[in-house]
Amino acid sequence: MSKPKHPASVEGYNGSLEDLAKAVGNMRYDCAAEFIEKLADDIKRQADSDSAKGRARLAERLYFTAQELYRARDKLLSAWEICKLYMEEK
Image (cartoon, rainbow, N blue to C red):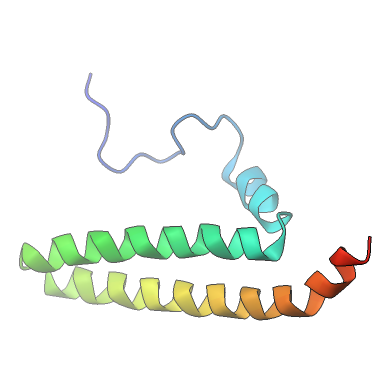
């Protein structure tokens, strides 16, 4: 049986999506921001692929999603700038 192109779970991760979200959320904010950036990069890659295949509506929504993820990354990095001083004190 072939592996689905878009699986409903994270390959190699046995926990729930809720647990995964909590694990990422509990990371240092700069590291969580890097994860979000990597996710945005991959969504953009998919948008590029769909755009090249003439799937304009899908590509548009994926580009928008990637852009929002980049904005979320920026906000998280801003939060990191605030809290990193407190973390360095420890």
